[in-house]
Every structure is written in structure tokens, then in C-alpha cells.
Amino acid sequence: HSPHPGYRPPNGPEDLYTSKPPWDIDRPQPAFHALADTGQITGRVLDIGCGTGEHALMAAHSGLDAVGVDQSAQAIGRAREKATDRGLEVRFVRHDALALADLGESFDTVLDSGLFHIFTGEARTAYTAALAAVLRPGGHYFMLGFSDRQPGGWGPHRLSRTDIESAFTDGWRIDSLVEATLDITPEPGRVEAWLAAITRV
Image (tube, rainbow, N blue to C red; front, top):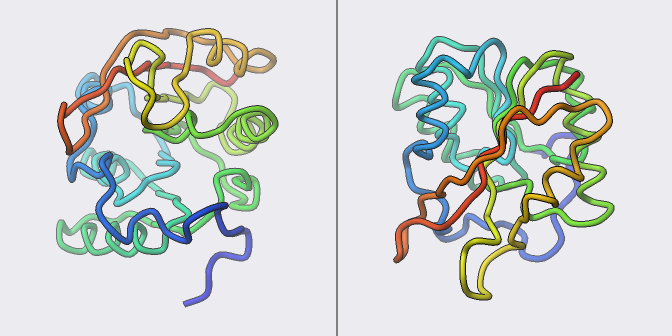
């Protein structure tokens, strides 16, 4: 099975899912589950950096048309197994988050749990441009990212409020940016996060 033609291998380890990573909790993040429960996830849904697919599967369970993309072949394989096991129709594609335009598709809602915070500098600019290419005007981007309120020096880049605000200026409107948490499998079981709701204008 060849990777999607738009795929570029990630820098660093070939596959983050050869063993179970800490963010792979086998259920939706509570912050995103709350969005689904309150009807804020609508239309065609793209789960970007979907991992083993819990948020795309959550959207499909709500009757929405969902697509999940991730660079990890292991994660995509596991996500497809989950969809089959649960009797849900979701398309999972191995694809580069910085090349979303290559999908040639348009979405009403984009979900991002723990992806935005890995990008800095030019890669972050490229990522927001990639988002803009697939999110229709008036569509919503929901992002859950690691927060600078979390103590310690381990883990990915910690996002400040300013990091998020400065990345989404021209062509975007930040509707809300609130303190939240990200559930993880090891102790302490959750970490400080930001939950951003952003509209493509």
C-alpha cells in the first residue's frame, strides 16, 4: 500500500505509533466531546493529525461525513480497524498536514487535537495556510493544544495565548480561546491546554 502522493515523511522517527503514545487515549478528548454534545461540530469534518481516529469516529457516530488524516501509517491502520469494529463510515488517509490543499476537498469543521503545538516559525505559517485551503469560508477550526500554563520542561512546545492569536490574523476570527485540559495516558493523566474556536472569514 503506497502512501498518498502528497505525503512527505516526517522529520525524526519514522512512525510515532510503533508504541502507544501518551496522547492516544482510545476515546475523544473531553473538550471535543463537549463540542459534539453541544452541536458545534457540523457538516463535513476533517480530523487533522487524527492519530487512531477517535475524533473522526465521534463525528461519524453523530451522523457527520468525516475524514481523518495523519502521517503515521500505524495510526491510520488502527483508525481503520476501529471504524470497521464500530460499524462507522470514515475515510482515513495517510497525508501530510502541511499539504492539505492536495486533498482537493473542502470542510465545514476542522478538528485539531495536539497537532498545532508541534509547529513553530515557518512551519506554523505553512500549517495555517494549509488549513485555509480546506476550510470553507464560515467554517470552524477547533484546536486543543499544549499550554504554557503546564509546569516542567518535558513534552512539545508550550503554546502561549499570543502564539495562537498571532497565527490566526488575516482571514481568521478567533471566537474563543479558553483554558482547558488534554487527557493523556500516563500520570498525571491530564495536562494544561488551550481550546481555541476559530472561524475562517
